[in-house]
Structures are given as structure tokens and as C-alpha cells.
Image (tube, rainbow over all chains, first blue to last red; front, side, top):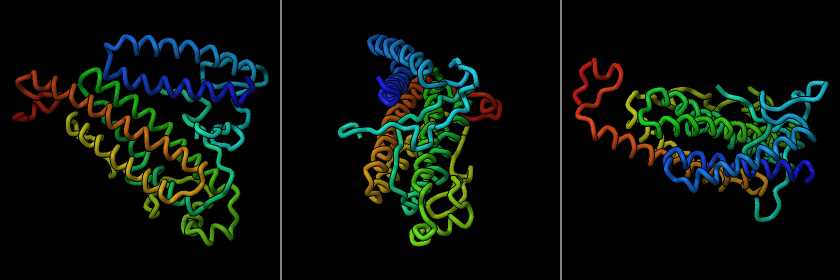
Length: 91
Length: 202
């Protein structure tokens, strides 16, 4: 996966996690959903590690940095260049 | 506490400048039904929430709204970044421009600066949850009106995403309200914190 593909996969999984997290807050006994949640978190953590290793820091205080300090690297998420293009049906 | 994640909740990649649209979308940054109001409302109200489900819901939706605030600011930024002065003059964004240039400032589409008077924190979890359900519906309507005003698919896609989140949040607040009502229904008296001491009759 190139940088944009990796970021797109992480963004999609993180969104799944946010949504299922809110669902679980009001359905805490749905163990199938808890299992799905756990599986998504493990999958995204592996992808995040790969992203950080190849393209720089993602989570504040949870990513390691090369030297020099990578947190300040451009682009930032509000910049056009940071974001990946969504194609066709994903839009 | 919070930790920043260096990405958006949903990608925003707008190549065509459109100051007219930026001047409308800014209302979801600092307007009456915008994301700043939403976030501040839920993150303040969570301190008086009862039941584990309602506390978590307010905390987490309040947090997600901060990510939406960032998305709205990003849209305004990208829509104005390469807009020429000529375009700004013709677009209806001229009044905003003379106060803020292309900076992102919390105002409504009509230029009214953000005020905490847009929100409440009433101390009664039922009252707050009803307000929140209404707030999600008002924001959903606003996103629909914004989509009606937009023609660029790169702008419409994130607006549709944000509209859908209002619907999910409405659902979760409704479920939280049921938990709270059930909990209070099982008690003879409604008394929380100082409410009990001041002799509330409920």
C-alpha cells in the first residue's frame, strides 16, 4: 500500500471504530459487536505502526519519531496535500 | 484529556475555490447549530449526566464533534485558500473578508460571532438530552440546506458525511434518554447534587 492507500484504510477503520464505539455505549451487552470492535482496533493498530514507520507520526504521544522530530512535518490534516482522493462510490 | 490524531475523520480535498460556499459553510463552525456549539454543549453537560451509558455518550459525541469542527474549518480553509480578491468581491464573502481575510473565525453565515448563548447546560440530564436530540436535528437540517447550496462533489461528500453523523448521534441520545428515564423512574425522588437540597419536588 502506498501512503494514500494506507491512510484511507486507517481512516475507514477508525471511522468504523468510532461508530461501533458509540453503539456499544448504549448496547454494552452486544458481545458480537464488542468482538468486532476489538478486531478492528487490533487491525488498525498494526496499520498505524506501519504508517508511522513509513510516513511519520499519527497519534500525539502514541507515535515514535525519527530524528529530526517528525511531528512538525508538513502537511497537516487541513491542507489539501495531506488528504487522499475518494474515488467513485466512496464519495 | 485529549490527544490529537494527525488526520481528519473524513478526508477533505477541495481543488476549486468557492468563497460563496465558504461563507455559508462557516455557519457550521461558529453558527447556532454548528459543531463548536455541539461540542461545547455535550462536553459541558456530561458533568451532570447520570447512568454509565449517558455519561459515555455525551463524552464521546462531544469528542467527535471536535473532529467535525476541524472538518468544517478545513472546508472553509480549502475553499478560500486560492480565491482571488475579485472572486471574494463578487461572492458575498467580502464582509467576512474585511474582518478576517481568509482566516477561519467562528461566526454564523450571517456574520454573527459565536456565543455560548446558543447552548444550555441545565443540570437535569433529561432536559439536556432532549435539547441534544433537537440540536442534532437542527444540524441535520442545516447540512441539508448547505448541500442544496453546493454544486462541487468534493464539497458535497463531506457535507453528506456530516449530515449522516447527526442522524446517528440523534439515535444515540435517544437511547441514552431511555436509560436515564428508566433509572429515574425506579427512584421515588429525583434528587441529584444540590437539586435535592434546594427542595425540588420531583
